[in-house]
Image (cartoon, rainbow, N blue to C red):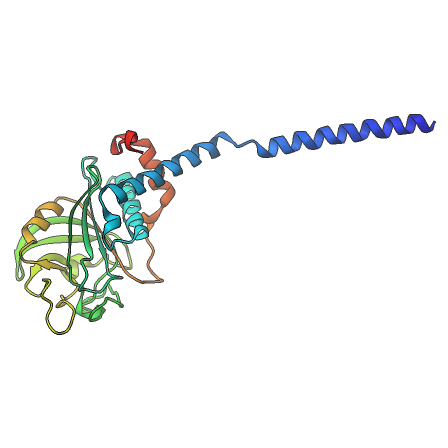
Length: 260
C-alpha cells in the first residue's frame, strides 16, 4: 500500500513539474504583435539617431530630446495629412537657450542636412535674455510654444514676412489673430550690444535681415516649425510617439534603410 501511494505521489509530482515547465515556456513566448512593435520602435530610434548624427546636430546646441519631439510632431503631421509627402523641412526653435545662442535650426530630414543654425528673437513678454514665460493671448507680446505650419508670404510693417498657423489649441492657436510671423529685424545679429541679449519682438520669430530671404524661401509652403521652451503645462496631440513610429514604418521611402 505504501509503495502504491509513493508511486502515485511520484506521478503527481512529475505531472506538476511538466505543467510548470510548460507554463514557463509559454510565459517566455513573445507575441508576434509585440515583436513587431519592438522592431518598429527600434527602427524609429535608429532613424532619429541617424539624422541627429549625420546632420551634425550633435555638434550644435540642439538637445537630442527636443530634436526627437520635433521629429515626432513632424511625422504625426504627415500622418494626419497636414503635410505633403515631398515635404522634408523641419525647423526647431529652442527657447531653453538664451538669445545670444544660435537657437533656430532648419533641417532637411530627407537629405539629413542642417541647412541653417542661426539666431532668433523671442517676445518682449517672455523675458529678457531667456524666454521664461509663454502666452497665446492678444497683446501679451509673448512667444508661444508648439507646432506651427508656415503659410503665405506678404509685405507688412516689418517688410517681407511669412505667416504662421498655430496647431496646438491653448498654446499657439491664435497666431493668426496676433500676427505672429517670421520676419527680419535689425536687432537680431551677433553684435548684441551691452545688454548681452538680442532685441525682442512682440512674439514673432524675428531673424537677421541678412538671412531673411533664405529663411523664408526655405520655410514657405507648409513646412513645420516646433517652438520648444520650459513649460510644465505644454502638451500636444502631435507628440504621439507610437503613431509617429508606425507612420515611419509604413512609409519606408522616407528613410534610407541601408544607412541604419
